[in-house]
Amino acid sequence: MNGKTKLWPVVLALLAAIFYAINTPFSKILLTNVAPTFMAAFLYLGAGIGVGFMYLFQYKYEEKSERLTSRDLIYTVGMIVLDIAAPIFLMLGINLGTASNASLLGNFEIVATTLIALIIFKEKVSVRLWIAIGFITLSSIVLSFEGSGSFKFSIGSLFVILATCCWGLENNCTRKISDKSTYEIVMLKGIFSGGGSFGIAIIIGETIPTVKYIFVVMLLGFVAYGLSIFLYIRAQRDLGAAKTSAYYAVAPFVGALLAFLINGEKLTVMYYVGLLFMLVGTIFVVYDTMLKHHLHAHTHTVVHTHNGVTHTHVITHVHEHYHFGNEEKHNHNHGEYLSSEEHRTEHKEEI
Image (cartoon, rainbow, N blue to C red; front, side):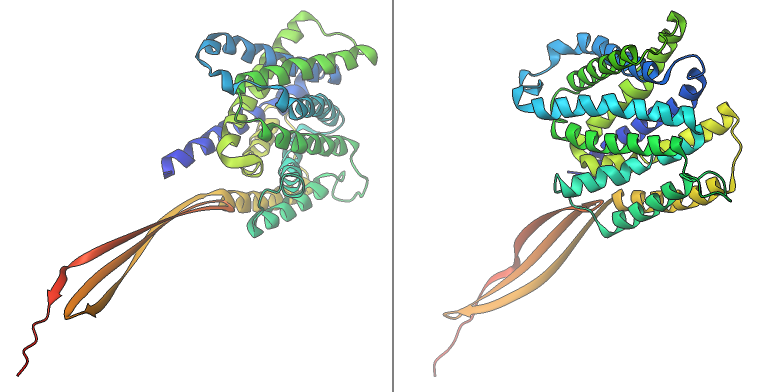
């Protein structure tokens, strides 16, 4: 395994984050004409149908072993159910709060994903990642209160945090099937999660949006959910749930920037304080998951004599270390090289 091999999934994770970042500011605009639950429904339907079309061109090239089976059912169902709840909570949070706060609070997903990965799925969590979790949690608490002089908890922020917790568990469910067909996973996730949200929207009596808005929301869903989830799952294959979520930390910052540019939201003191803590936490996350590779060797010489024949052995130990975040892979190549004086015969004369 080399640096290039390990860098590629990082690129995929960052692209996934950037695609997802456009969701919050544009959803804020569309929510003026589309009800929250229908918004969640059509975002996922756009993702599922869009990736489904992509799958039509890829299906014949895919190995049968890659496809989902009955053994993957529990994680697939868990993924779908959580994906029904999460976007509904997020749309409610965006609708009741600000897009900038919702974007930054999205980083709480790192905390949820990591804790669930640790407690339930037994993934290793490093000290640096624990520090990052602490700062991100502190930032989320700060951002969840309305105004610098108020201790009134924001209902919008609560819904966003609920959404991130759902996605944290969903990330871990998806990780368990990430080695299967990415096309199938995203297609099923989109169509069934979107269909579930659509049914809930009908039951609670939300107004169905016009065709024009349905098309725009589905297009946004294809990019922000479909392509983002597709790249996220591909990255998870190599990085695991906790680390992929960690790189995903750039999404809220991109989303918050777009919220200022697109939604024209003003910055508050609490936002700056929360941003500072979130930046520190994200720096620790990125540092923890940076690829490190180093090679070192040490040599020692062993000389011994048997029956008048001296053997000189130069033994070189090569240690190759790959560190990726809190996960370490060590390749130890022990090479034993004999010196040019491999066999030196000692002649003894008896007088």
